Image (tube, rainbow, N blue to C red; front, top):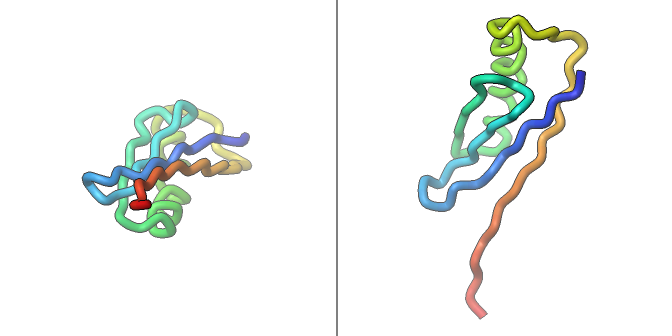
Length: 72
């Protein structure tokens, strides 16, 4: 099963936010992109188990978005 995890940078809070339509209840954040991915590797299977969704094998597809304003 391949799941899409959307990761978006919040410039005001200075955190990455992870959400997914494929994983009910998923809403996590972290100031570190890599730390968030590591946390998701453990949290997603747990959430799927709590929601009685099949969990093996799982493939997480991370899609990130970060927009920055720069001076010219």
